[in-house]
Image (cartoon, rainbow, N blue to C red; front, side):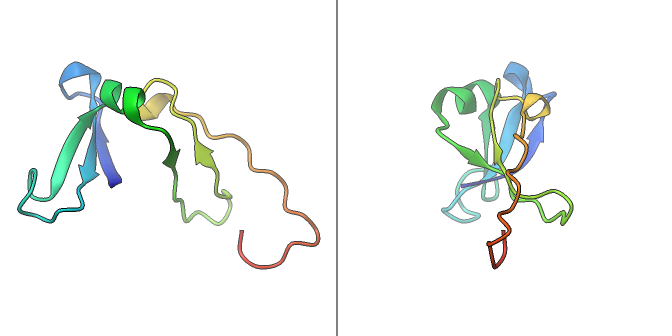
Length: 86
């Protein structure tokens, strides 16, 4: 499952728009909507994929289910002996 959007104005305090893995015939044209409080209760981990070369990859920490309140820890400095992509 991949979170593709969010709506802070949706009922129950907002929700994530999620691309399902069953195709366009399931859900709402291939998408489901998960309220923040449900995500906070059941999500084990969430990963942020960001292609900004000035912002190294990091894990997102879900504070309260609302993406506006999430935090991203500072990335660890690269080892001088490390090779390849980060």
